[in-house]
Image 1 (cartoon, helix red, strand yellow):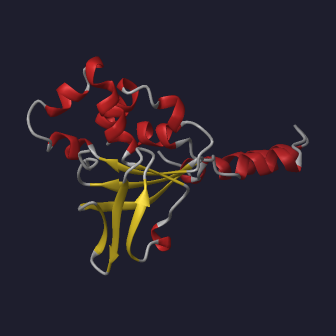
Image 2: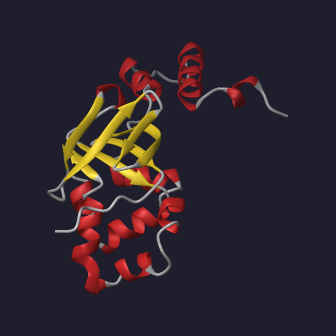
Image 3: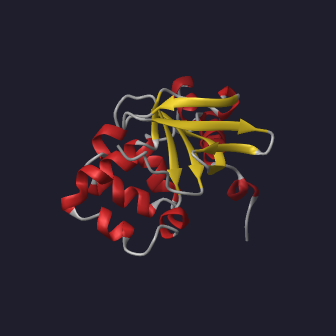
Length: 180
């Protein structure tokens, strides 16, 4: 049987418990402790948010294979255009397996860094067509239209996913840097 307190969120439970304990004389809880209990947890860095989402398993595996975890956990801020697992699955057969090989680490790094723009760019900041510098070094084309936002043709399916060191925009395709 679910009680009212079972349906309360954790911060509300903590505050209610603190109030009951303080009223009953069983404990004294400071205002700082109550505020800490009530404050929502800050999101993790872009890597932690991607791991927690559950739909970026392939992206996370690629980030690890490319030794970019530390870089993307850095101060930032970063704007990450994150392809879903389905986006990676849509690559031609064998492409992903080939990219994940240690011998192709630099190529994988280049592809992943092409999905990252320095700074925190929220969807509301996007207007018209812009060329955005990527951490890979070559620009990506971002188009904000009434029909939605695209990055080199990949559609943004979820925008503005908060992270402590930037923002993630979920895209429906893997984007590739232009060949040199």
